[in-house]
Image (cartoon, rainbow, N blue to C red; front, side):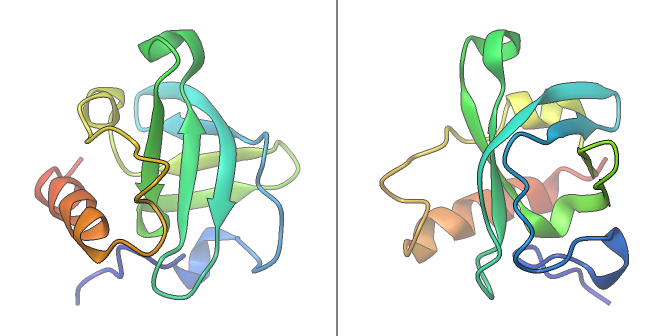
Length: 116
């Protein structure tokens, strides 16, 4: 069974409509930053994470399908990738992240080929 890269999995603890802005994001090997924006649009759900000083202010887009847990009490989101995999992901493009199927394909291919 393949995982839907662009949708939250039912067991992760995310409820549609919940704001995740400001939540801390944890890779499998440590923190990577905070959620700057997020979307729960069907077929295009994702997080935009501000990595702060960790990668010199870079923003990364993480497909919702990589989320393994949402802890609303602690305001933390856990993702199924290492810090290195996220650091090397394609640059977040604020002009393409909505409505650009090619950009989503590029990200899906990258994250799909880098299994934690």
